[in-house]
Image (cartoon, rainbow, N blue to C red):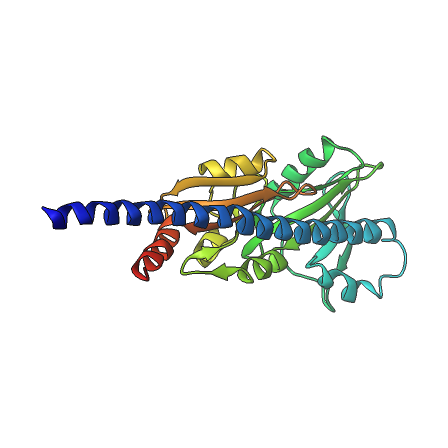
Length: 260
């Protein structure tokens, strides 16, 4: 009887330690993961602004000497800049390399970019992910005053590199989606290759709504409850999150209790 009575306060103590430790772990995640997500968003904002500025410069000076463009365009992962007339015939092509590409642009992509730019004539717009030359690309595009449309396939290389720079714990990572919720960068290369639709996740919907914060959610692909700091990229509408399985936080708590 005495042994049972003595064990009760001990059990209560360990329960209190466990709850407090988990609350502390979550509080730290609230701060650290959100800071990382915001920093990633800032980097992507600067990068996208610079890439759009380069596109604007090339289009504005497309009739002039293009000798410097093969060095300039690849710096921002722009494959090439094309000008198409009102009949979608190629009238000018400025490449980011020594040779012209032989890739044929999908007519459906051209039609989509026509509609996208027609909604904002004169403005530079960024499309969602589309397949180009066997890999997902964005397109930067602009409808000019004479009906010419300027467009540029824009590689996801930098976004993927940035995503790969964030890894912690066993499964903690970062993830980027386009403005439609399609995966741009993720530790799973297959999801990147097929531009997996992640728009069904509540945290992705929050990013697409232009919100910033911390959320717990269930991830069916990982079969795990997750906690993530999330935000968005204002210039493009992309979403950025830094998720981690909650079970990893619980494992940290267990190790803390075992040391007592």
